[in-house]
Each structure stands twice: as C-alpha cells, then as structure tokens.
Length: 219
Image (cartoon, rainbow, N blue to C red; front, top):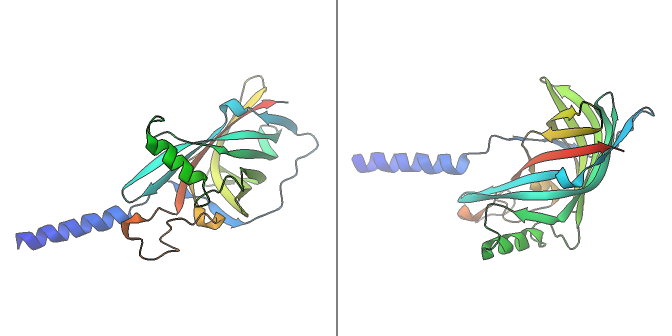
C-alpha cells in the first residue's frame, strides 16, 4: 500500500514538473499592423545603445538558459511623455549566454546553436526589428504594441511597459514587464513539442521570456 502511495506521489510530481509554466504572461499576438505615425509636435529620442538591452530566457524540462541581446539603433517620437511612434533594431549577432561561464565550452556551444539555422539563423537574418503601432491602457497598465520581425515572420505583439522621463527632459527610459512570445509563430521550431512528436523530455518550451530596457536621449 505504501509503495502504491509513493508511486502516486511521484506521478503527481512528474506531471506538475512538466506542466508548470513561468509566471510571465504571453504577449497578445496578432497579425502585423500599420506603423504608428507621430504628430508633428513630437520630439525625437534616439536609442542609447550602450544602455539598451533585451534579456531573454528559454526553458526545457531539465533546466533553462538566459542571456541578453543588444539593441543596435532606433528612435522613438514622444509627445508629452507618451511614445507616439518609433522603432528599434535588434542585433541578433550579439546574443550572449550569461548563465554558463564564458570560459566553459558549453557557452560557445549553446550560442552556436542559437545562432544556427536550428534557431535564429543569424547568417541569413542578422537583425530583428520592432516597430511601434500604438500605445494603450489596459487594467491600469500602459501597453506598448508593435510589429516584431524575427527571421522571415512579422507579428504584432502587445506587452506592459513603464516609461520615465528625466527631470530636464533630456532622456527617457522604457522598461517592459517580463513577457513571453511563442517562438513558433516566428518560425523558430527546433525542439517544439507542439510541432514534433516523440521528443520525450528533450523538448524546448515554445515560450521565450523577454524583458526590454530601452534608454533614449533627446536628439
């Protein structure tokens, strides 16, 4: 009887382990939309690339990996502290892995896999792009919407952000909440159990966690 009880407990634990998901909410994802157009009174703020990053995290049943990607250029048009339009370019060549020491061969191996055709195919698609399509408010939060182009696909995503302006108005900072995107919608299909059978516990979760920090300076 005790053995059967332990087996049930073990089964419940296994189901819970494989069923659990991260707390980050998936960005609302729809078809691409027209880019937002700012009013003529809007002020241009250019991306401070040294301080602007995208943090990423990917997970699988037996663990996770995380790192950062650089934002190489971009700008936003701001009116009364509100973003009206803009875009930024993501340099996919800058993908780094931070949870594995740089000197470990596993770091270079993982980065090589991420940049290969299995994942982001950096040789063919060296950059990704985000283009603002609108800003709205939902449940008391500011929602930034935009077209994310990654590899050969473009989808519109919406996610919560907070913005802050310096006292003298010379700079603006945008920080997103941690959110997720379903990578398969951008044709990043490797190891997806929703697309491939018989992966067992070797699958990689479709959801990728992202957190954007965008620092801009008045042009």
